[in-house]
Length: 203
Image 1 (cartoon, one colour):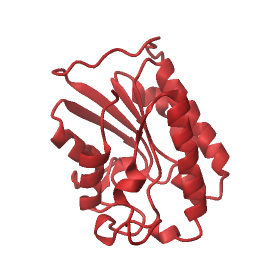
Image 2 (cartoon, helix red, strand yellow):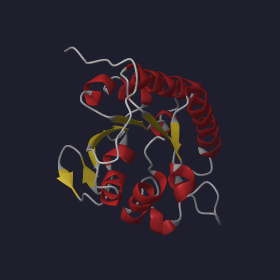
Image 3 (cartoon, one colour):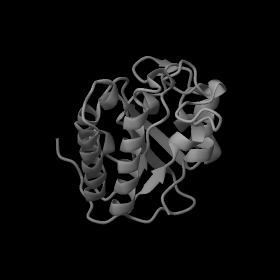
């Protein structure tokens, strides 16, 4: 299949419909309440709440539970067809499966660059706190988030601060209890916070 490539990102006008592709793992998909293959509770997606906050937005959910960054990257071109904005999210499954943090960062950078090659404004998401993986996974999450921040800066793309939006200030490295449903994924209230507080269009 051939994909349309644009050499420059176009400007998004205030009144137009904006198609946003959310490419990632279970956090983009909306686990545990929503399954992109079966449907479910639409409020268990940050995309739902972002679209409620800005009615110009139409989201295409390209999240798949359990995928690593290398698996997510394989789906980018297909998911990006017809999009106006690309959201790139992933990395926690790389950590959970013992993959090197540097490799996950390399894959995320490649996805950002591919989105830019397609002429899309790109938004990059950092990793959430992981209650069920705390404290062992915490240093790797912090390190990958540092690398994600560096990618955002060096590639000049917008960073969406999912981690800090759900981190419990009284328990660093973990989500606040009411913002997580199972210690790994946000609750509906957590997804609402991500959609309303963390998501923003580039520029």
